[in-house]
Image (tube, rainbow, N blue to C red; front, side, top):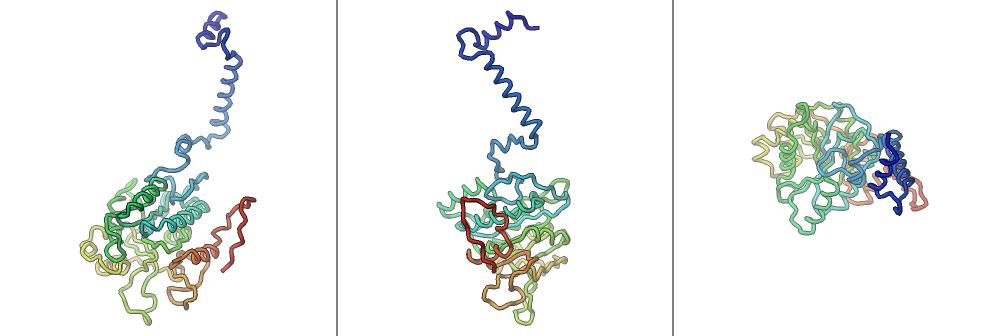
Length: 348
C-alpha cells in the first residue's frame, strides 16, 4: 500500500506540490477522461476504430485494392463481401490525358454504382488507360490524379487509336498482373472500353457470372447484320469487350498479335483470335449492349434504352450522358437538402 510520504513524493515528481497550478483533482479528471474515451472506442464502437483511415483521411493509397472502383470520395460503409469465387474484372477505359472532365464523370458514375451495390467492391477495378504523356501541363495534372485516385495506367506508346494501343494495353496488363493468390489469376476477365460508353456494372458482372472463364470473348458481336454490312470476320464492338485471362496472356505472347497490331484495333483483336482458332466461348450481348439512338433509325446495334442494359455507347457529349443517366435513375439517391434546389430530371 502506498504510504502518505510516498504519495507526497509522487506529487512532487509530477510537479503537483505546493504552488503547482495543477491540482491532484485535475490529474484525476485526465485519467477519467482517458478511460471513458478508451471505453467508447473499444467497447461501444469497436468497428469504427480505424487508425489507418484516420491518418489517411479515409482514402486508399494508389495501387491498393481497398476500393474496387476509384471514386472521388472514400466509402464509409462496410462492403458486403462477395463470394470468394465471384467474377474478378479489370476494366480499362481507353482515353487521352487531356479529358479530365470525362474521367471525373466516369469516376463519379462508377463510384455511385459500387456504393449502391457494395458486393462489387474488390471484384471490379476501373482504370483509365492512355499512352505516354507528352504535354508538360498534362504531366502535372495527371500526376495529381494518380496521387489522388491511383486509377490511371500510362502505357509506353505514342498516343494512337489504330496503331497498337489495344495490343499494348493487353500485353502490359498480362505482365503487370501475372499471378494471384492460391494460383488463381488476379482477374478472370479484362475488358477494353471506350470513354463514351456507360457500363452498368451490376448487370455486367451478373452476365459474366454465367460465362466461361477460359477461352472467352464477350461483347457485342459485329457485324450484327450480314445482309447490310460488309462481311468482316466476326469481332466484338470496341464499345466494350472482355477477354478471359488466358486469352489476355495469349495476346501478349502470340506472334500474330505482336507482328500484326496496326489497323482497326477492335477488328484486329477478333482477327487474331479467328486466325488462331481461339475464343471458342463467344458471348454476343445484343440487344443489351448498343449505341445511343438519338434521332438515328434503329438497327441491330443501335436502339432506344432498355431496362436490362449492360452498356450504352456513343455518349459523345454531356447532354447524351444526362439523358442516359436520367433513364437509369442515376440520381435517385440524391438526399434532400435546403442547400441546393435542382429541377427534377426530364424523363427521356
